[in-house]
Amino acid sequence: MIRYIDDMQLTGKRVFIRVDFNVPLEGRRVTDDTRIREALPTIRRALEMGGKVILASHLGRPKAGPDPKLSLEPAASKLADLLGAKHEVILADDCVGDGVKKQVRELKDGQVLVLENLRFHKEEEANDEAFARELAALADVYINDAFGTAHRAHASTAGMVPFVKEKGAGLLMRKEIEYLGGVLKNPEKPFVAILGGSKVSDKIKVIESLLPKVDALLIGGAMAYTFLKAQGIEVGKSRVEEDKLSLATKILDAAQRLKTAIVLPVDHVVANEPTEKGVKSETPDRAIPADLMGLDIGPKTRAQFNQHIRNAKTVIWNGPMGLFEVEQFAEGTRTVADSMANNRGAVTVIGGGDSAAAVQQMGYGDKMSHVSTGGGASLEFLEGRELPGIKALETK
Image (cartoon, rainbow, N blue to C red; front, side, top):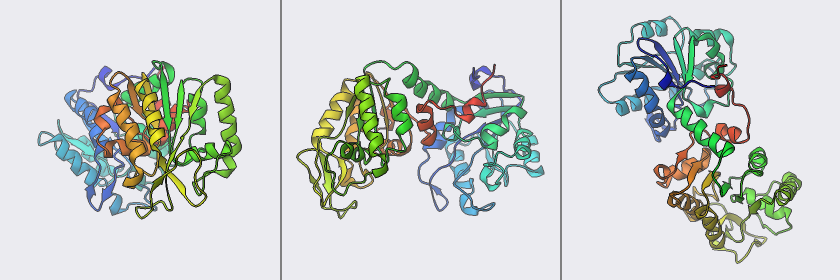
């Protein structure tokens, strides 16, 4: 069982919230504040409940100690803008040490202390016990609201938890567990999963987990070409994982035994190179000419995928349908997003990563039931694996 922030007494307590402020930066500017916005409900709730709020996050991958380019200062500044004048946001110059302890002691009601980048200390990723105890010493209550890092057993996501008196999950973590867990445990039928992206190898475990549960599995993106080649179809210069052809065949055979429909592209958008300069055309059928590469699903496939999505009651999507970063190869990804957004009667879940980025970029984010903030974490959750950051929150 996991306790949530709503069920706790926080008045006057030091509340350490592990958030995910690993946001993209351009210089000192946050270019996408989605993760900070997603953390706001939990931060506001802790403040409303009278807690002294301490936020901790990592940002990027510092190579050796503190790196000014990876300071959480831009994220703290963005948070201050979003919270408004009522709440002062203070950035600590470290995440442990006497200076931080003093700042925690001096926190006033309504103030928020943001600790500096946890990964400025190599002990964070090493899940070092002494470092974990130092973090724990700052808190009376530990709240994890960083689903995107829940698959990592780091000091701030797992190691410190046993050394804090009370533990629980935030509102974003609850949303992630409820939606992704609901898809796995009790999906309303028909249940359709859509998988894309470049590699079959990244999605093997997800396919194995979902295959017995779904009514149809729609496969697009570069991973589709490995499946097509395994069926003996010519795929030209398209990206193929040659060492995964036999695995693709096994997956297709397993689907047949389970009577689960695997829906592969029946036509393609192709070009001579994967750039804006690529000369785009469409194939009439599944075969791709030897001198071209598949870079998106074709119009017939888009119509077919749209039909499956429109008839579904539960839809989960992970991985784009093509090279969506280049506009002329983005139509397949846009069609899937639009079909899901317009199926108002279905539970629609985006499983993080590139598909989440595409959905937000194309303006469909607020039209989905849930857009996961975790790329690797959502994949591992859908594989049915135990995530250390969630396991650490469980009480008997």
